[in-house]
Image (cartoon, rainbow, N blue to C red; front, side, top):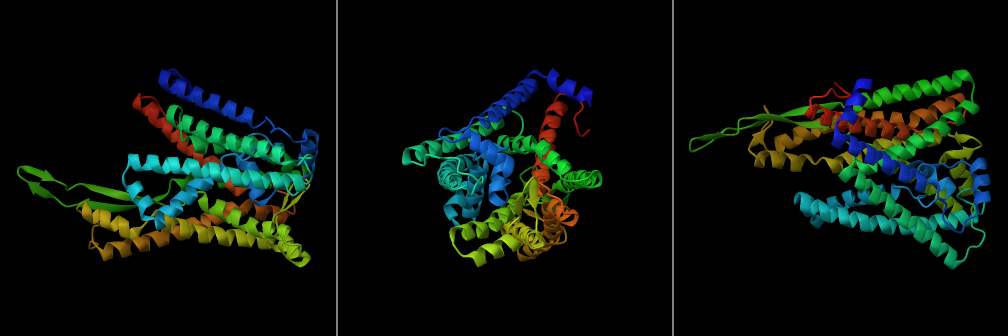
Length: 431
């Protein structure tokens, strides 16, 4: 392994890409420590020691690397960009113009990327405005951290947070262009990794050695399982018919369509966590004690000193929503009719299956068979830490989405570094 790291830094251009990426990481973590103007730092420190967040607020804090609880300029993190990307993917299904832009190739993707940036800024404005209001009334951190709630002060905070999101988006694109790996994914990776030590320390403080060992063992098993399932795929063979044009024989090759077991990635978990936060948001807006008690008892992963206290109904609802959104998002990502039409247009066919409707039914059958275990796998990863915390009656701040993202991004980045090493006849990580 040491020789692998040594070979990585022997290649001048690869070494420059890695150092550039590490430099962007340092800038990002520096920005996450700079607070926005106009907030009470003493109250922020006091609130951070007393309260824990769950739901979308906890998700924001996770993706911002703890910047939200410190109210830094990067408080929103990269989540507005993720939300904008998901919205654009969903709109491409129902808007023919967006679908046509996706089919145009690189030029069309550039237009969609530009629209995604504009949508990210708009979402950042809305989210920063809402978070500013929650900061003032104490629903975000438990204390009023903006004592002087004036229009001028609010405008400064909103603009600062929105600009911070735009800078994060720019840093991610710089990593993609001049660094190594996918920039947006690596930004999320760094944010989550920066929170892992505090999350493990929280579990250690609030549990005994056996319970802490159980949590660590579960994280290890989940990591191994994620790496195994992430590389699992069903290969559908495709045969292209031979065509004779003059003296040339075209076609006749064989290839395959790789269908991953986890085709939806981490998106269903993000969707499910966001949906479960809506009842809590509504209950805080409506002064009805009965509704608030119902949501607090069944639909909220309530925060406690030192971590989260999951309830069994919350765990069940979360698992069911993950399964539902896995089927939903996979259906958006992979269209059997469009795939079958493309295969037929290129002169290909699935061996033993007639082109046309028979191929569509064949692809739909395979898709449903691999999506079900994929959805069960995602649901288990999402609820396993909360379920263990409920069984042992201990607060577990670690979440399945953290392990899922960290393992997936690390594996993908390692593959890219390995390909760079193999191009120069060096041994890679996975060799």
